[in-house]
Length: 288
Image (cartoon, rainbow, N blue to C red):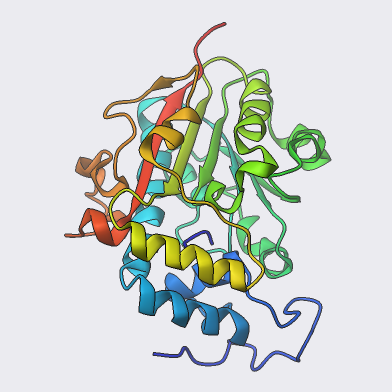
């Protein structure tokens, strides 16, 4: 799944076995980096990714399509909705243009807080903190399953004003949160902390288009110790309960405001629903 031939060694050379960063096990953020063509991944990540590619050949297309959706949604919220604050949970390894680069290209004063819990993302956090001088960015080392830590972190409370609208980005993340971890409760807690006029941006792997390939992909992640659960369109729509969906609602990401692809970096070209196998949407929190 996204999240997050054999690639070459990482830019810094081969990693030591069982290092604090590697531990000899794949990680969803580093596998996602691999699928995006990045180099910040390790042998265990590449081996697991190679298995996924044999089962779901479109996974690299899905990763790029999801990334393009995130960039289009961010640009839409900054340019069309006037959003100037963003909370990006499950950031992943930095891949330019990152969310803050997109938002600050529209509104330099935008403020962004990134959240992830992977040591390699933390190691690259400085890339995420190169804010435009008029804005601000920060990084929180935390897990989406602990929303209180995210919301109460000094980085979050100092950079974001939660009494004003915030865009909460949960892209390609919640398929790593199985039902026993109560994903709907987690999302509701995060959304409840945001002011009316805030937005939820979400994308999620689905079995709706290619159930065999996507389920076998989940099995590969499970074998590597990574929890996961794919969800139907109705299950993804449930994350937006109580919110006002932006047209066209929950849609495959390559058709969500595909007219905003005038920037070639956010264009995914001709892709099929089966290759992407994701649902995505953006919704506004109404006044209570």
